[in-house]
Length: 151
Image 1 (cartoon, rainbow, N blue to C red):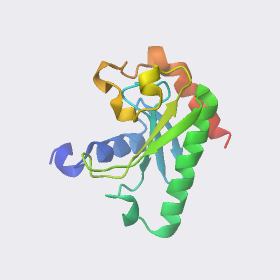
Image 2: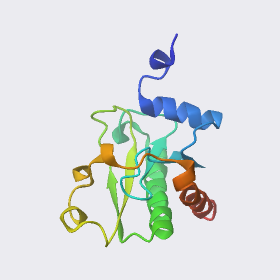
Image 3: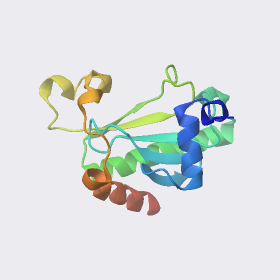
Image 4: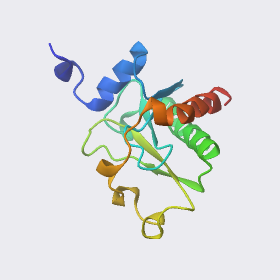
């Protein structure tokens, strides 16, 4: 059986890689899942929180695990905000394209281009953004790991 059948979504595959300890973009394990850097750094520090075990959507989680997941979301947002110096965090949960719960944690900055500063994050051209690279984003990843370790 191939990994597409075993792990039906990219979220499932990333969680499996995090469990195995071989996902380059992993920031840290969290009580409810995994904090990872976004593969596209369209805004410096863009991160995600993935639940473990993977569920289809927030309402599919039992209450104590759901409460922890939402707490972890805010904790990751606090760390991203502190490390990046952003002015706020945008949080997004959709699950329409990738039907597995995941939260986008997106720092916003005062120096963003004026027409994008107050726009929806999906207004950015994600395809033109810098892909995650240890050479470029490694120190940010290390700072996020440290910030989460201290929570």
